[in-house]
Amino acid sequence: KRMEKKILQDLQFELNRPTSLQFLRRYSFVSSASDEQHSIGKYLIDLTLLDYHCINLKPSLIAASATYIALYLLTYKPDESFDYYWPEELRMMTPYKTYEHLSNGIKILATLLLKISTSKPILSEYNLLFKKYEPEHLSGASTFCVKQQKLVHKLANGCCL
Image (tube, rainbow, N blue to C red):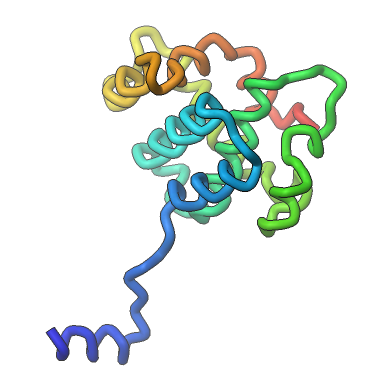
């Protein structure tokens, strides 16, 4: 055991990379997120685990994008700006200060969500996750997202400044 630890230290190998879910928990706490917002964020993060377009995204960006999308879908108002959906508390505690910082992650996650919600039936690789997030105790996150296709489409096309 000591030898393995020594080898990892010599290689400067770090085993404790934070996950997107850990970032989401922090962002939800800081922004006083509702259970529904947090469930939608978790659903989006789980979807990214199955999509190769998300491999190179930082866990913090995935969580931040999921947080933004959840808040956008839940509180959409046509005349609101980026600051409304990404409150000051989150701008202060994350490296994501402007829409430009989040836009790539938002577009990728929204495109993924759109792909899933517009396929009939739900794509088989995502079906279990869809069912997992259907129940009431998870705020029906998956079905809620399907019902928000128009807003998700706006996010995927970058029309949400």
